[in-house]
Length: 77
Image (cartoon, rainbow, N blue to C red; front, side):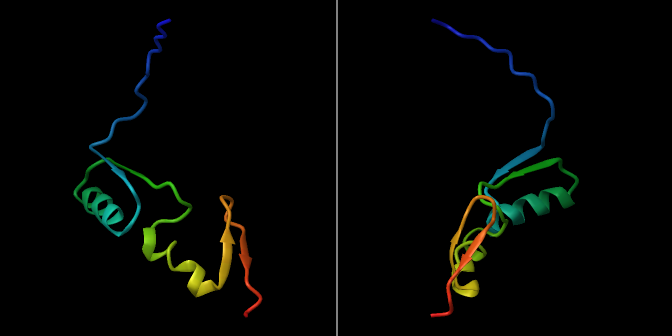
């Protein structure tokens, strides 16, 4: 079987950046400042990559952060 579906382009971008870590955010920000129409795609719930998501458990003492952003904290042990 062969399936065909027409893909309708709704928006266009000068630059698409995959990853909202330090490098991705910096690239998207710099391009936007130069007047480019930019799309920044990040799979987690916050920008900053390992600098934010990787350290958040140590800073907050969190054990688990789910997809909705609910945090289960440790009891301070």
